Picture 1 (cartoon, one colour):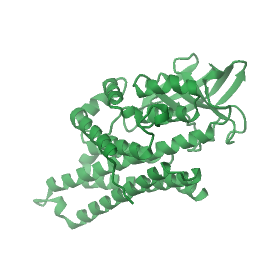
Picture 2: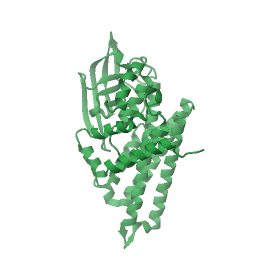
Picture 3: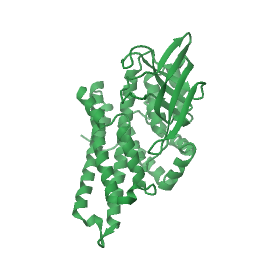
Picture 4: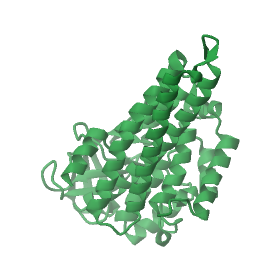
Length: 377
């Protein structure tokens, strides 16, 4: 089987690499993180001009093709450079959900704005106590005539502070963990009685906790049929899981490269520490973990692009995320250990890479969750 990238994928990869080399050094990234928005609006517009925001979408929606392998190519490079722009919450999560559930009118109105860099979105789906279970939704949606009233609290809403609109999961019927009864609503973030608490995450992104108190939205703001959003949500979260797993692969490979380089310059007993056989063995183990991680993420992406059943796709995603979790712990912790104290400082990019991959390990379910999910499928 041929695992090499196509010509289009190589061009996409080179496009990201050139952008990073020219515009995204470590000091520039720190300034962007420290800004009020937490990302660069100029970079976001450049993403749109370069066509990157079309990659998650299929051709029918006006996108690049919507293939998971194409997305993997981009996310790996994003991971190496630790890009903080909200590609994941806006294009992959919200764009994907609109593509999966939205009507033709909703797609026509929203997707071109996303691909054009004109619209920032955030997906409000996680709740306290949900523990990665997408069906565990206690936020309620009660219909009153032509309106729906939303009540509940969402946590870890990525890109919440910058989002112009929110996609909110809410329960219209059924028990708190029932598969049926969950809907998704498009809500203007400035709507009355939407209360937002903003905060930075450990890896430098922007997130929010959002409370909805009797928030009134039109019934027409619902994506898809009433109570039938869970299957689409599962599809989108699986794609996002593969995307962040690919991002982790890029970040882990950056950690490995920087650790090897450091071992050649840091001296102990008047010789580079890279000459010590014990450290060579540890870095060789890091290399093996990176290769295993890359292989299983590529497998998951290829299966998502195949005609396999939904169950097989979910199994491949969980296998990849579980394996990625192990690689994250091994490679990132070894990188910090070999760097020593300097590896823990904010002045070194290794510390930021460590924080990002640690956050990815928990995002959309940790290794234990995905091991259990794999076993259940």
